[in-house]
Length: 114
Image (cartoon, rainbow, N blue to C red; front, side, top):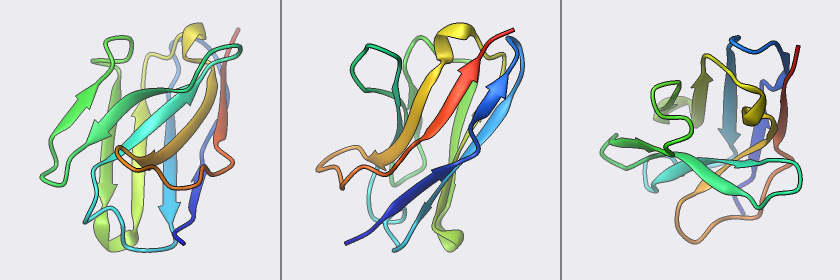
């Protein structure tokens, strides 16, 4: 079973940036559409960014223009560059497939606060 490990979260001031990483124990990024999900405090987990096999990206309206998803198939790693962070971006971020999700990893916590 492929395992996903997220990292790169932390505490950042509004307007700041973070780069999240997702490492997979197997070669899944080259055969599946992948996404970054966010679970804000008290809310359900939501898909905020996705990338298709062909590299086409799409974003939730709340992060469009500020977040960029990318992947490096050779390194089995996916990234989420987050710029112009807002307090409402606070939450735990997870990576996973877009369809038929794998068991969730631990996620990485992002806190945007002054």
